Length: 148
Image 1 (spheres, rainbow, N blue to C red):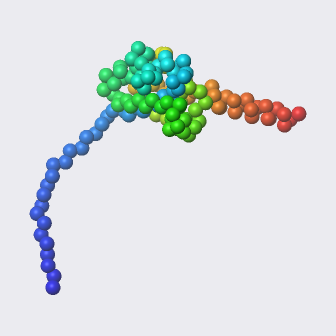
Image 2: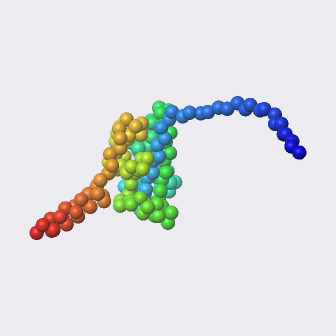
């Protein structure tokens, strides 16, 4: 005893959107008590200040239509922000990450350099002023002591 179910053929129009925009995620770790952080972040509102070279570079990059930029401000004074900062090993604030790469805060004051990084014309140079420099010094000191 067999039976057959016949389903109507339905053809649905399908559209695929292909985005040629590069996605950039900027994470800025800040503290409301840090005077350097207050230069780029309005800590009361939890927003980037509009009169900074960083903000201007972000707006110019968005205006080109080449990139899609998402800015995440992370306050390290909150338990969640502190946990996130510990997770990535933040040693000082403000700390800025572009697509997971920590960049030097000196670039925050150079609009042209930030614009080039955001548009992908220049790779972000990692900031090695913190952990890697101290680790290198520590290993050098250990190596020196071992031979004497």
